[in-house]
Image (cartoon, rainbow, N blue to C red; front, top):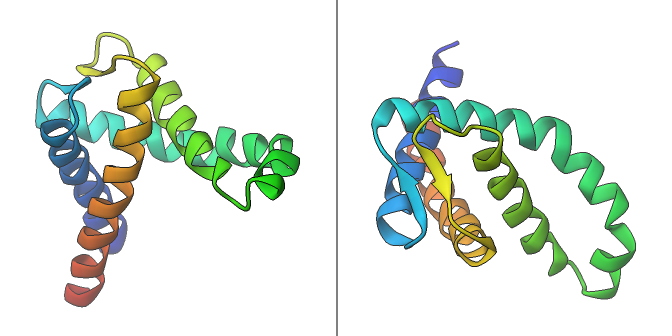
Length: 117
């Protein structure tokens, strides 16, 4: 339970950092970041595997680079299904750049959390 809470808070912090770095990603508060972290987790667990299966041929042809597009689409979808909660992504380019920054920042934060845990 402790690890789950640390990961959840870490993802919310990573989202806030990403919103500060990438123009076009709006997070209005830490509570909005917590809600967005839950929604992103659910989208990654439910929608992302389906997209990966459907896009497997394209991913294979592009030697895995299409995975970046899938990550961007899942992040963009997560913001689209949470209107009015303070999490908004204004277009595909911010979603694409945001997914890259979020992956890097989340990776760093998760390494810190795992070192503490």
